[in-house]
Length: 153
Image 1 (spheres, rainbow, N blue to C red):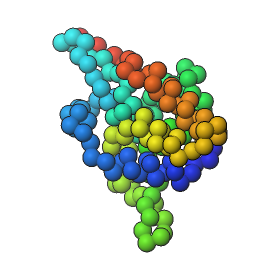
Image 2: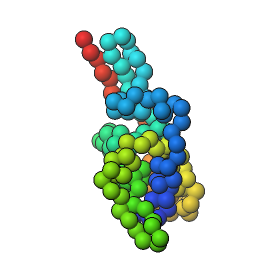
Image 3: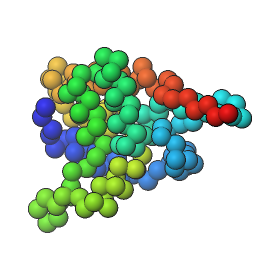
């Protein structure tokens, strides 16, 4: 799989945007971006690809790949898209520190917008464009779908 500079720049841009009020109100312990109370004794988590951390994306990718909605190379692309690889310091590549990697892994990303932006920089019909289009279709179909149910007694 080819990872190009377009993907990395959009990933970095998405990670530097301040979270919205909706994102800031999400509980930190929730494994997915959106939770709805099912009853007083449990909750239902749903996929929200407009506000999902790279750590959360790992679980979502496993589900999408496991159900055949995305290919393995698309799964890798989705996992890498929200994570910057490093920064440009005076024209030199500087890899992220462990602390920067951890912060980035827990910062919500709008994956829908990230892939839409990436597509706008690609030629329709190219393999990258087609992959991004397939990824967007898979995310759109899963958006709002149940990702997990927590039932406590």
